[in-house]
Amino acid sequence: MDTRGSPFDWTQLRAFLVTAEEGSLSAAARKLGLTQPTLSRQVAALEADLGLMLFERIGRTLELTQGGLELLEHARAMGEAANRVALAATGQSQSVSGLVRITASDVFSAHLLPPVLHRLRNIAPDLRVEIVADNGIRDLMRREADIAIRHVRPDQPDLFAKLIREARGYFYAATGYLDARGRPENTAGFKDHDFISTGDPAQMIAYLAPLGIHLTEAQFRTGSQSGLVAWELARQGFGITPMSDQVGDATPRIERVVPDMAPITFPVWLATHRELHTSRKIRLVFDVLAEFLAQE
Image (cartoon, rainbow, N blue to C red; front, side, top):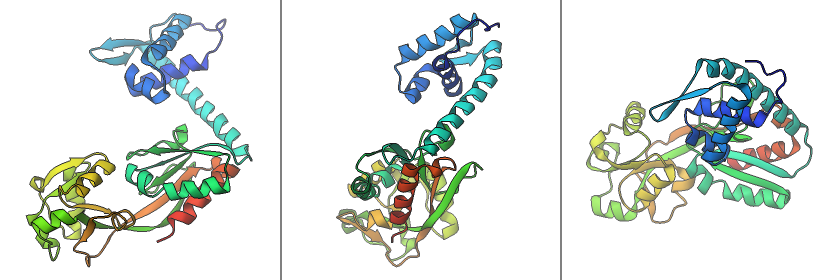
């Protein structure tokens, strides 16, 4: 593979890198915000420039060839270098304008972040904020977001993380559901009720068991990977589900179940890249978020 006379095209190499990491053209196209034909043309152009086949199709997936595997290591190194350049450039920016991406869970994004956006709009009217609602953990190192709100402490050494507070959660259900099924006096009474899962019911059962709350998979008759959908199912009377008190207590026709029980506590962390934390716009959004989220 001799590329000494070939012009370097980072767009093509990035298309190859993301396709290799995602394992399919469709997934890579979604991540890059491209159409699949556009991405396919970029990968094909790189193969043509190199005179090398980088992928072979195995069923519905793409497998790297030996040449593709050798190129992948170098592409990753170049991708990391490109990310460091972008981070450094953003960190040096002192303008309170432009785009800042905040990632948080879908429930957090929909119910708790809008008041922050109103405040930011008053403070910095030229700032653009994009909310990336995702229940997974977005990669700050790859600039998929600038600031993350998480319930676990990030462990990457290049990230700056701040514990904002210990939030509280309780069990909630629609008033109509409780009128029909009864209001349990304590958590032992949960055995007679339906529950709504957010994610894997087995994981919820295992998490609640050490707290003395013993449920069975048969009780989780509905659920969703989306916290917003699960909360709407609770609102529609499908059963009981845990929720942050900031959301649950503010939702009409929803009430706490066993209101005097001890809360389920969980941490709220803010994280950003260390270099981004020197950017005026990132620092402004970070500080406003920290102040707002610290409130009870």
